[in-house]
Each structure stands twice: as C-alpha cells, then as structure tokens.
Length: 334
Ligand code: PBG
Image 1 (cartoon, protein in one colour):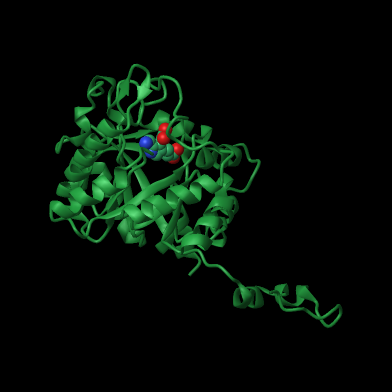
Image 2: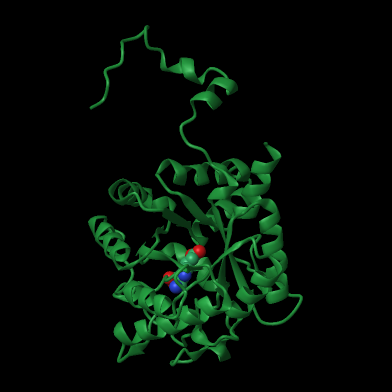
C-alpha cells in the first residue's frame, strides 16, 4: 500500500530536485564500476587489435592484446571480463570440435589472463555458434537444432573452460537441461566454486547483428534461432526459464538483450531476488555509437543514462561494451 501524500503546496515534489547536492542526497539508484562485465573478442595471431566496423571502439584482439585489455580493465576496477572467440571460417565444422579444444582462442586467453591479471574474474561463452559451420548454437541435423547431443558438447566445453581457469561459465545457447548437466559435471570434476551465469531469458533478437559480425557468424547463420531463443512477445516464459535454471544450479541469471527488455529484468528481480544481469548487446551499443558519431545524441550522457536504467530495473550488473569508457568517466567524477 502506498502512503498517502499531502496535497500541494504542502507537497512540492520539485523541492528534492532543487540542487545537485539535494539530488545526490535523494538519489535512489547508483551506478558504479562494480556493476560492469566487459565482453571482449579474442582471435588468432599476435599483436593484433582489429577494429570491428559495425561496433566502433570495439576490437578483435589476439591473446597478448586481450591480456593487455584485462590489465587495463582491472586497473579501472572492472570486476569481470567476458571472453568471446572469433574463429576463421576454416576453424568451423559441423562437429564443432574446436569448442572444447583446450587450445582454442578462448581457453588460451583464459589461461593467459589468469596468469597475468589474477584479480579479474573471467566469464566465458558456452555455445557452439562460433565453431559451427552453420552458425547455430547447437548441432544441426536434418535442419533441426538437436538438444540433447548439443548439451553433451556444451558440458565438454564447460569443463575445458573450467580447466583453463574460468570463474564464471556463461551458457548462451538456450538448450534445455544444460544447466543441470553442466553443474553436475563441474561438481564431479572438482570445480565446486566455478559459477554459472545462465543466459536464461535470451530472446531471438535482431539486436545481435553487430556481434555476429564481430565473431564472424553473420554470413554463416543458416535460418534463424527462433526454435531455441525466446519470442520477444513473451514475458511469463522468461520467469519459467529463470526458475528452471536456478533450480538446476545457476548461480546468477541474465536477461538479454537489455534495454528493450527492462520489464523482464524487473519481473525477474522481484520474483526471485537472485543475482540478475542484463546484457546491453551489440546492437544497443552500436545504435548509441552511430547516433553519437552523427552528432545526434550526446554519447557520454546517453551511455550513462542507458546503464543507470539497468540499475533502476533491478539488475545487479550489466554486460556492456561501454565498460572501460563508463569506468573512466565514473573515475573522473569521483
Ligand atoms: C551466441 C551469442 C550471441 C551473443 C552472445 N552470445 C549471438 C547470438 O545468439 O546469435 C550476442 C551478444 C551481442 O549481441 O552483443 N551464443
């Protein structure tokens, strides 16, 4: 029940907006560097920082450069980095064996970051798309994305990442039963402390376009992902997915994309109270960058407003390509 408020002029709601000091004192939500997980792209080679045209300011980096980026992030106070591999077309097959290769770009990056920047938490991506010739997150048989055989592969991928030193496993595949299978395998292998941040409510979204360029999957994708990723029209289903993943052993849950799905973030947080994250995805990032480059919006202010929106919606943190830029800005204002 809402308490009643007195009538004007006893109540003048503008009183608490009158100065920066009073606004600071009455501010409800807070954005800090502690809220960020920074997604980075890793590729083959050495000394490489290759710009991604559809994501201004974002690069595909060779392992040595990813380590430099992790160092920079840790120095800015960013608590976690999330590794996404970019694979060349010849590294992709129907069998996706690269996904659980201990020597794949992602696993090499995990080991190198652990050795050089032990204080930053490392999150991974578990899905077959970047190793799959047809760009899907699971194995494809007769045009169908098969569930159970994919889960077996995801478990192998998870174990290889945990072996490499990952702290947080990030299944982004949307197969059924994967969290229970991954959790059981981690326990059995002695990785009790390895966490799972499940992409529980991941929508079949057109906002992933620039990311698919970044990982080299845009041209590759045959068809769409609608038989496993969620229908943007659904809200209740997100709660069922989150409940299922928490009951299977997820430590943290994610809603993705972010800004168009803030209603889902709020429902998830209010219903379960679990650590809840949103992914401000590539398309959201690139729209802000593009509009700013055209001089149509103020980049810094829109960036910070977009990030604060996630906190207001109840999120504990945000996966965002803006992480270093926002961290620098927050540091300069302290
Ligand atoms: C793939 C994956 C995707 C993203 C993260 N992991 C793309 C997809 O599902 O097609 C999107 C991230 C972004 O757009 O920034 N499993």
